[in-house]
Image 1: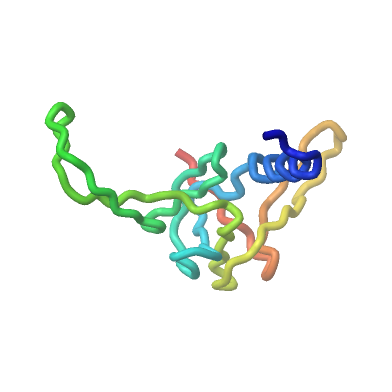
Image 2: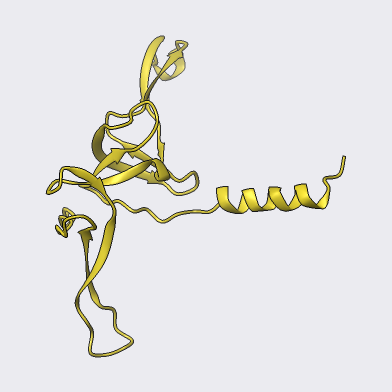
Length: 139
């Protein structure tokens, strides 16, 4: 059954919106606030980001239980296992410790380059109070 042109346009729009990959807004050491879902209102440290599915993994949040059969070939026992699943990036916000509230981040140019082809020094600040985002932990 062929789709009519209106249905085909709606389907392509939906695929364009849902299939769009978003760059990771968080980095190691950030505390993330969950805006919607079962864990709404809870915070946790950012773990990793899945770019294909736009999912943010937060330590100790969005836990599910899986029942697993025993597999002697890989030495796995039967039982219940808790797994962390991802939260969609649109359902999360960066948590500011100065305001004690979830907030958006804004870029602030600290030093403009003299050469127009060079990159400016940029820091990320809280949209509400202007507090700087802590610098990432270097290894």
